[in-house]
Amino acid sequence: MKTVIANGLATAVTLPCSLQEFLVQQGLPPRSVVVELNGEAVAPSEFAERPLHPGDRLEIVRIVAGG
Image (cartoon, rainbow, N blue to C red; front, side, top):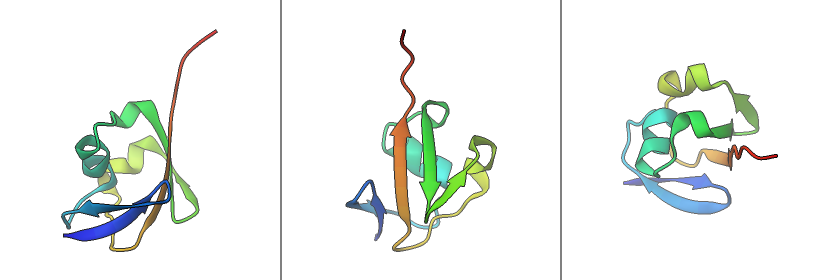
């Protein structure tokens, strides 16, 4: 197991792992979040193709609908 930093917390991850796989493992439906990986915004269409590496920094924000 390796770790990535997700929203400031060290989080264990089994590599190789895509960003999409990581989100699903964390119980976050990929269509319900906005993600920044190492300071770069990632388009949802790229989640499945973006591999994670040990020490990567993720900022994950849930999208909430409301009025």
